[in-house]
Image 1 (cartoon, rainbow, N blue to C red):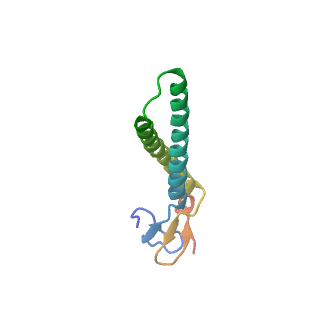
Image 2 (tube, rainbow, N blue to C red):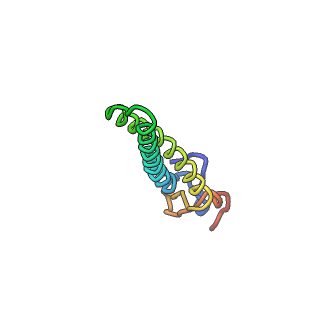
Image 3 (cartoon, rainbow, N blue to C red):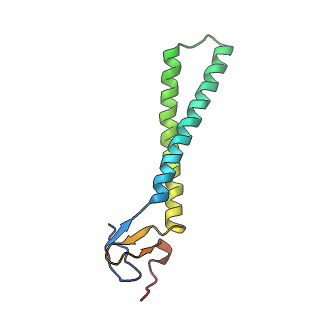
Length: 113
């Protein structure tokens, strides 16, 4: 529940936040970031094997895991920021617990009767 937002229909402060775009953006960003990082680490390992001595399999796997974690974290953060912008500016992100009205941040200050 949020405390500084009121329902434009009934004025209640009992509001729940949905954040669907933020959640979806976080998941999509995590998967995309991890996948992209693993693909890049495979390419780097292949080029390194051609140019210099081959690294051990354990080192390549550890590098891929670390790359995936870092890429996934960066992708998650980026997806969350973009999803938050969508939640705030496009979607009806708030639900009034009292009257069931759904509204967005852009309409929170407008009062309807």
